[in-house]
Length: 117
Image (cartoon, rainbow, N blue to C red; front, side, top):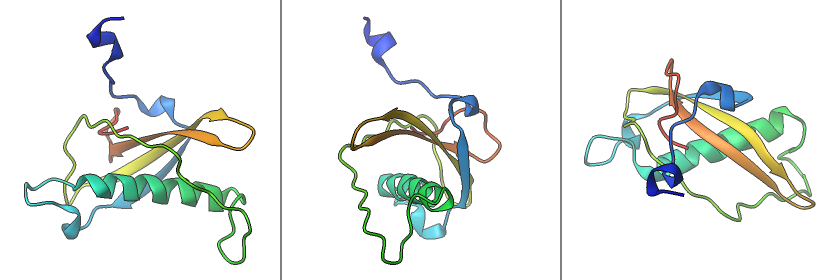
């Protein structure tokens, strides 16, 4: 494998099965005028949990099931900043005996490829 083939690339909307839309907020921007890296993770986490709730897998009140993040990473392709609206796409990459691996992609609203995965 060459460095180029190992390098992450943006994905299209067809790589994801479920989408959740979010509006960015003024406070999401950092001092450089683009969305702070931590906000990407907040949006990914919110989209996955909304998917679990909407699917009836997670009930917040009194649920004994515990979901933890064991590993994460993010590749950035396009700048995102307030007042951009975004869509977060989710696909299940792997279901194990006690874990699920999600593929999560953040799109600028109306864009065909991910701004971050």
